[in-house]
Image (tube, rainbow, N blue to C red; front, side, top):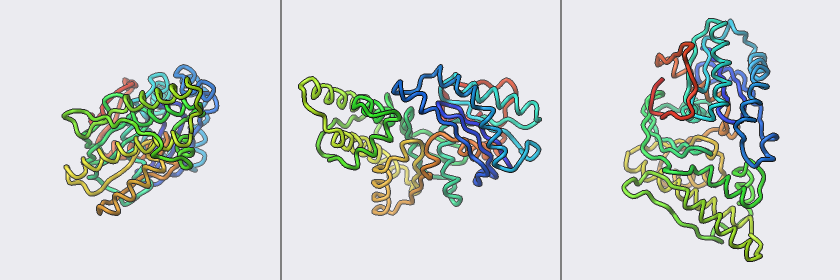
Length: 337
């Protein structure tokens, strides 16, 4: 089964053709980083306009690279939620128009389910059930994946996401956007014990995260040093922040794994590309006898291949939408369309 997938939830316009949820026939991503870098982050209005400019070309390129025309496409999958509403609407409306004119089924896909499904591409042998840590700029979840379309959140951030903590710290230090990537590289040359930051916990919710206090403590430390005329050792700061965030993520994730009895652990989302997170999880899982899976680096960021992978399983589950489909800025990963 060949699925044409479209992703436009934030600042990347992407399209892909995926066969049977596991084989990527083509994948095209048009990045907007060059435009948003001058603002230090994504400007929603600009993102929406650039999606409008790029989407036709990106979909056409994905079709051409796959060697399949619309007659060979069985369904069209699109990220419908969550994300920037203006960006989502571009992809959803394009997919609706294409599905209507081509007479193809339309499959709405949850963006975070797509990130999890990126692992099905990198690991063709991976099957649910498993426990997944989904970490990105906007989300930090621990998800029990009981089936391809049956998911339960057992831990989540109560405020900021892990990726936001990285991005805001990077911005305060003057690193270019996207900050998380640059921080990770800089941290490799720093002392992770140079600074000590608080470890927030959520009372009564041992699997939940809170990164707002940590982010504020980091920013205040940087500002205080600058006000005193002290030079901020950027590599040491990056290493210390990275270690603090990774410690929080791994501690909560492993606690959830022990309590739920899951031995198959999965990483997903943009922050799953973080080098320390991967190293730490590899060490922990090797010592504890857990199976560990994470996507190829090319599939950690937003892409349409992951949407096509999840779209396949949504289609098998009977998920389909009509022309009344609308984008939503927020929606729980637990809810089936």
